[in-house]
Image (cartoon, rainbow, N blue to C red; front, side, top):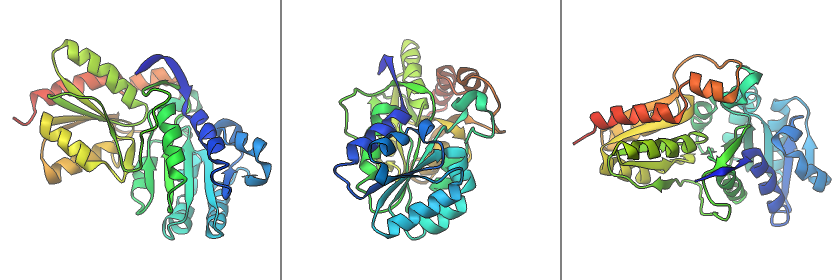
Amino acid sequence: MTETLKKSLRDAYRDALLSLADSYPDLFVLDADVGSSTKGVAFGQRYPDRYLNLGVSEQNLVLTAAGMAMAGRCVYAGAYASFLVGRAYEQIRSAVALPGLRVHLVGSHAGVTVGEDGAMYQMLEDIALMRALPNVVLLVPSDYVSARALLRETAALRGPSYTRLGRPEQPLVYKLEDSDFRVGGGRILKEGSQVTICACGIMVYEALKAAKVLCQQEIDVEVVDCYCLHPFPARLVLSSLQRTGCCVTAEEHFLPGGLFEIVAGLAAREYPVSVHPVGVKIGFGQSGSAEELKEYYGLTADHIVSAAVLAWTMRRR
């Protein structure tokens, strides 16, 4: 974990696209008039004949991407998560997921850390909506390094994917040269024997901060970066639950339909243990700074520490 170096996950989107251009001459990038925010416009500036701005029309964005994919193209379509998933869900379901087309959707500005833009932009239900669609790979990277690597991985997929990105710069969790990420995988970032912390997105960094505090309290936690939510790394997580006997989940998303329900369902089916959630419990977002909203909605390392202590007292013995 590199505390001093921060990079935007949107920069990872830009860098992944530019690095894929030569290897995938059939790759096209589509935007919904927010290319300067998603950073997709950088691809268009270098490859103008492989880039389209569809304007503020996410439904058209998705349908155009589907049509190009049917013609054999590998298409990346980027927009704000709140409008890409929220406004174009029917088109994603019918025109992309159902036929299983090679369309890679990138939802930027997800979660409460959009900050002052308010509830309209703070998408907190996109994981629930997208994981309900069969055959759609669902990725929630935690930092620039994992986002860049995972977006590069999606180019080789023959079906659709959705990658969730936030707006603020994030501290690096991984070393810049790390590229060992795969669809369907996760990563144990810290081994431990008493509590499992499963986290995704920005909450992975908070989980690692919590692990340091818990270590001082002589609670040995294991931190798992669940960067792929579908397909989910069930064997990796289940093995951790069997070692520790209890779990905390941490996500910048509504609890219904998110990481908590995935892990709790896995535990209920395979190895029943106590699972305690850290996430947005109820209600839409509101305007405030990213740090203020993380504190208000209980998305900090301190909240993970409290949940881990509770889980440890109730662990399976």
